[in-house]
Image (tube, rainbow, N blue to C red):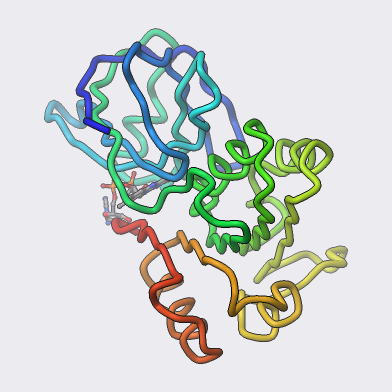
Length: 235
Ligand SMILES: Cc1cc2nc3c(=O)[nH]c(=O)nc-3n(C[C@H](O)[C@H](O)[C@H](O)COP(=O)(O)OP(=O)(O)OC[C@H]3O[C@@H](n4cnc5c(N)ncnc54)[C@H](O)[C@@H]3O)c2cc1C
């Protein structure tokens, strides 16, 4: 799959949470990608072109548009992106990345930390739209209820795809939260993914989350060959 470089105008901006927004573009002809891959986006920041990688949160099955989803950090690049409006243009190149899924495995487990949910949304949507038999367990870790993104979409996918199971854990949940608390750990994996030794794992999140997930999976005997990962370097 060769990569393309193209100019793209923003067609839609979708608020996803208090500090997360999705940016959509018309999908150019010939732009093929695999669920889980990323693009590199270039915008002008204080007069200079700055490029950053973003996972595609859209699925290859969504033919009309491509989408990336940014956590707004208040830093310079983030602010420049957040100031863009529908019709504004940026350079996009891609696709890149090896943490992708096209139905190669019967059972997969997706572990996401924060905005690391973006490629997982793409994979879940791909499996659902393609009607794949793949059994997918997605475990998302976020700070609080306000930081959860794509919940409504994932709920909709669960209704269509009986092989998709989604679990949420929160590290700073409100008192009202009745679900799991804390980071993803061995006990959560053993409980929610009892067949973890026979699954392929996909992990995406900030570097520290990725490191601790790898250590934890190795400690319970998951073979490194069964783990695909994407580190959201830059946080
Ligand atoms: C493969 C890949 C996929 C990714 N996918 C996503 C994704 O889907 N969604 C997403 O949101 N991110 C994703 N990222 C991370 C993304 O590329 C950015 O690095 C990240 O969003 C931080 O961007 P920013 O706007 O805060 O950048 P910047 O403004 O460049 O800030 C980057 C860092 O620099 C420091 N910094 C910047 N300005 C200041 C300042 N004024 N004072 C002090 N410190 C400062 C901060 O530590 C900050 O965290 C991905 C990264 C990789 C490698």
